[in-house]
Amino acid sequence: MTDLHTTRRGRWAVSAMFLANGFVMGAWAPQIPLLLPRHDITEGVLGLLILVLGAGAVGSMIFAGRLIEIFGARRVLCVFALAILPALPLVVFAPSLPLLIPAMALFGATLGSMDVVMNAHAVEVERRLGRAIMSSLHGFWSVGGFLGGAGGGWLLAHVGAEGQALMAAGGAALAVLVAMPFLAPDDPRPAPAPGERPQRNRLLPREASVWILGLLALACMVPEGAVLDWAALYLRQELGAEVARSGLAFAFFSGAMALMRFLGDGVRNRFGAVLTLRWSGLVAATGLMAAALAPGEGMALAGFFLAGLGVANMMPIMFSAAGNLPGLSPGAGIAAVTMMGYSGILIAPSAIGFIAEHAGFRLTYGALAVVLVVVSMMAGRTASADSLRPAPTSA
Image 1 (cartoon, rainbow, N blue to C red):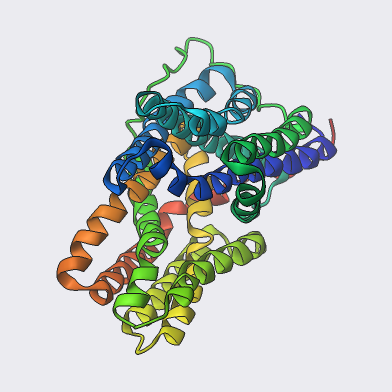
Image 2 (tube, rainbow, N blue to C red):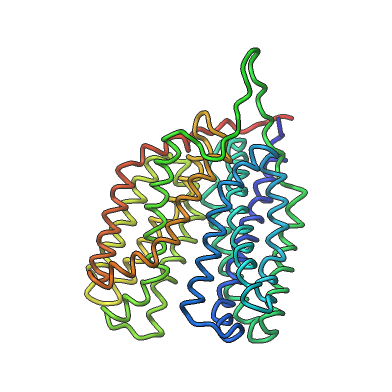
């Protein structure tokens, strides 16, 4: 058994991994518009390239779960943490469209795989500590995204796209290389009982419980994607907000998420995962409904802020629940739930755009509020998130 001091160091090491992953993702955001003139492509082609990135991420996630079962989360996390470092420079330095396409797919695959593995490793650390830490880890991801995005824009203006990509890789490398030696060792695998055949690793779990969690994760991620991709347009087109203020919708939403994620572990440790998810879903639904019914931009912004507070802890709870499902390894459970949940980011933009074009954004956000109420009603499905072992006190 690992001693408590080592586990606590491992908690901060995996926090650095979340920070690095978010930092690279944030640094990528300001690079996106620059692909248009660099490769002389249209917005439609750029949309397809982003789809390639998302497909690479989602498609690789289930294989990451298999690798965890074979090699252990710590070792696989180190591999993918190193693999993300050259991924952004490969995209930025790609000299032609035929080379940019596989670079985008590789970028998505490394980020998506690392996402699965760091969450699986976080579940092991959470078990050893005997208390929830998942929300604050996702808070570090949000901080990394903010630093990568805000600093990335400044660097683009001063050192150019190539210099920004290399410096972002260097910053992520610093966090990764410092953290790697302190990652907690993997849990020992229980030996099979006499006469028992070792369980075969399956690429796709057969347990219905993990796929139900995956559907709930999808229902949590679609509203997040709806705010990310369409809230600014909603404020401009239907509420008459100025261009400078329309971007505040996602800023309020993401700021509330980051704040609540650092507070969320304390809430969950006190009230449990099921009750936290139930009230989080209701708060998020109330916020989206307020935004949908808002007579002006002020109430809409308040609604999106409230929705961010509610959504913040929903996916961390899903990850903890998936990683603690009985009879299923953390890697397999988290890989399946992550794959389904993040596919919502791929589905949401086009589907919501089509619905909003015919029904309007008010009805769309109102319908998503109802979806979050359904998630709240099914919060009991995440009871496994509270299956944490007591914190170890001796070696």
